[in-house]
Length: 135
Image 1 (tube, helix red, strand yellow):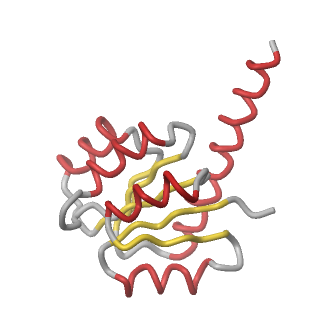
Image 2: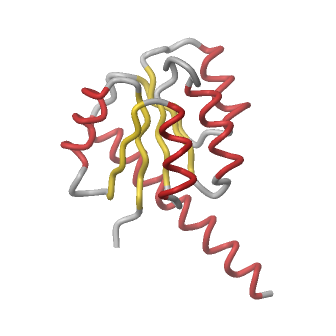
Image 3: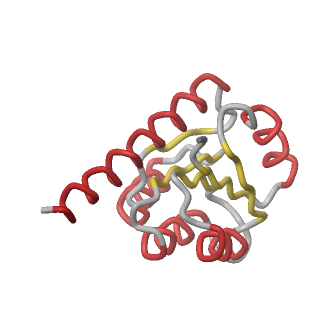
């Protein structure tokens, strides 16, 4: 069974392109913006991985990922952004506790490998919790 992945961006064209490109490798869901992403995490979760854009109106990607961590702490969080500055990367790591920071445009093989690594990380987290709960 394919693990669920949530893609969050304020540009529907980006979401559609990613969904077309990776729909066979992953069970992809999309959310248009942070508010919709948070709703999907609550209602349609759990997701193995959530990938968010950084600059979005309303809730930006850093805020979204920090809130996502509270809602779904086991979900692996990543940022995919066109903003390449160090401050953004540091805020994403420190506030959202992200697993990967990817920049747009992201080569398809790099994006796929990041998602695969995120799914493996999620499975590791879940396995570890399962073992600990049996102890």
